Image (cartoon, rainbow, N blue to C red; front, side, top):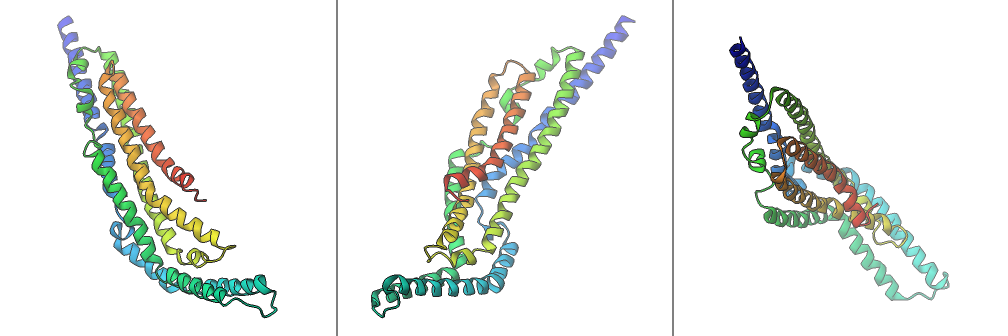
Amino acid sequence: MQNILEQIEQWIKEFLIDCITGNLTGMFDEVNTKVGEIAAEVGETPQSWNSGVFSMIQNLSETVIIPIAGLILTFVLCYELISMIIEKNNLHGDFDTFQLFKWIFKTFAATYIVAHTFDIVTAIFELSQYVVNQSAAVIGDTAALDFHTVIGDFTEQLAEMEVGELFLLLIETSLVGLTMNAISICVTLVLLGRMIEIYVYCSIGAIPFSTMVNREWGSMGNNYLKGLVALGLQGFFIMVCVAIYTVLIQSIAEAENLHIAIWTCAGYTVLLCYSLFKTGSVSRTIFNAH
């Protein structure tokens, strides 16, 4: 009878070990795969990420937004000319011709900027792509980490545990596994949300660009330009978060037991997700983009 009970206990123990091993094996696969793909995704320009969406946004800007920007630009330039004349001589006829040439130059510059809105936007994101690609080269291929590599061989640890501890560990790994799936979705939302925000910014660019030559209205265009730079370099801050995550996750090998290793790894992954969500506000704060 005792032998039968021992066999049943051994069977339950082996069953729990198999379940735990399966949970641990696939627990971080989806998250690590997504983390490993971050460098490729944030390093893409809007036209390379989805050329169809970019073409649609560009066509929308050229057919709908640029005509409106032209009207705004006309108003701004006329307001600039009238203000310049009034400020200079209060309409008494004494007018410096250099001011007129200055206004003509502003008109040319403003018209050129509005007409080449997408060229400017593309140049900003190509520069950002270069920065992200350079940072990805420094991080290398260590972003996607294998749980076995981090904590080593845990089979011996599982074999030494009792049934109760194994059952508790099974519950822990199941809960953490569900959390990792949710975090993987959050990482996808951060990357996708950033690209959608970039397309929204690109679609309206001609209007704020049309105000840049005026002193009173120019803050709109300047702030829009800073917002573009902040969006582009948000990819660099995302890569910094991934690099920090990589260094932190490698320290798990020093954990005293499997329980600590699992929850520490989960905590670092949650921290990564939170940091990715904060990269947008951090980038805007640094570049003073409101």
